[in-house]
Image 1 (cartoon, each protein chain N blue to C red):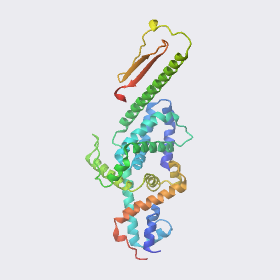
Image 2: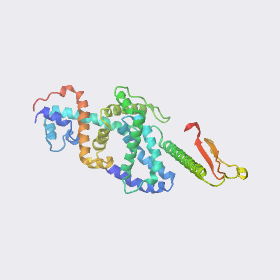
Image 3: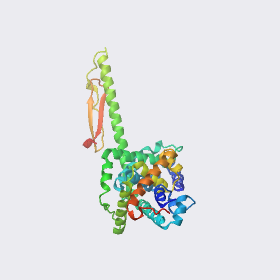
Image 4: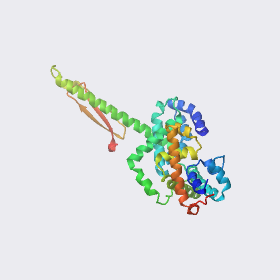
Length: 149
Length: 199
């Protein structure tokens, strides 16, 4: 096998073959040809640089900080999902109630004079909108994050 | 593969505890897995800086979805898929491919230093970062992943196929293409070896 043919095979050979290990045609040639062996050694050296660089790199943020940040972000994300889901559910209930109210043959409900004002408690980063519907039994409470998040 | 197997074995009891709300167990899982997730993220993105954000996103997703993990799937395979998805989402969002191509010609950036990081460590990290960017920019993402698992982490093609969710033939095809591309670039630097002598 010529050096030219070996050079082409070096491009796809396994790392062990590049090191001249085993009995493949490439390995045997490298053991007997210093010039091709040098080229194979260059390839191995460059790939080792990549391997070494990947082994050296690590995230800059200390792991304990990363854990705390991840837990906090996950909990925020879970709360946001819950708020969106509950808002959508409330909106759906309101739509159904309004639709049912429009179709109802019953006389209109009494004014909500006796109804207690809804009490809604939010965290510091939340806003709240309260919709009072024509039906005194239905109040839509919409909680959402400040700053549009 | 033994490193991955060891990892799967060591985190198995922690997963059960974390699934029952034990935050300390979750922290231990993160300590065990974060280096691997970061490496996968570097390989997936080709950029150590972006990989930090991807890694953090994976930790958030891990916390949110750990209770849905079932032990009939290999944890590292499940985690690799999560990492890949996080990298894909980021890729779509920021068109990082463009930056990756640009970074091939850019000088390696010096990362911000932690208070405890020595200047020599920072220089080492910057150098490593530059090497990784340059090499990985030559390869498409799937080829980078296969090359890293098989040639740099010594998994067999079959083991890499298990981690990546591919069949063995596809992995071997990606591997050969990756080696050919990478080594063609390397040998271009050594034109003195360009002509064979017909030995």
